[in-house]
Amino acid sequence: MSGIAGAMSVDRVMALRAQILERNSALSRAGASASPTPVAAEPTSFASTFDQAIKGVNEGQRRATALSESYERGEMVDIAKVMLARQEASVGFEATLQVRNKLLTAYKDIMSMPV
Image 1 (tube, helix red, strand yellow):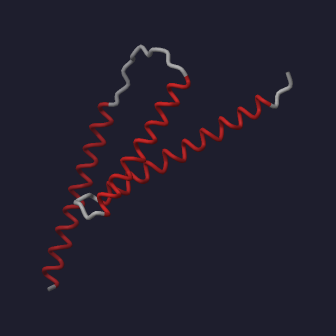
Image 2 (image 1 turned 45 degrees about the vertical axis):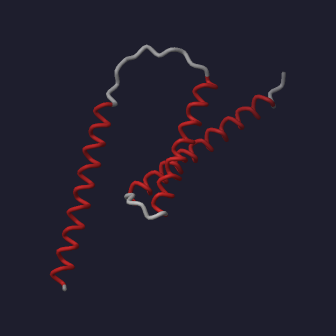
Image 3 (image 1 turned 135 degrees about the vertical axis):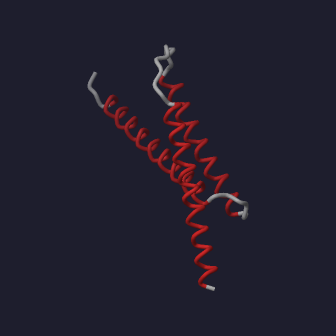
């Protein structure tokens, strides 16, 4: 029995190693494609930039929810992907809360200024 268990643990380790190597290569490709290229940026308003950021956070929340639901239904979803998506959604939400808090503080400061 220990021979079978040992072979299964070696298979699991090799599968984990393959997943790590796959993720490393994906990150390398993403880093290479994100090379800074000077592009003439058209002026955008604060509202549109903020709206895009909120939509991005919302999309991250949706993706994390969809992956979690798929995992809970028993579909073949990598638990690491589920946890990573949930963590990304959490970080995005926390960052959004911090920006909101800073904007509210700035608004209160402006409103309390004497005219």
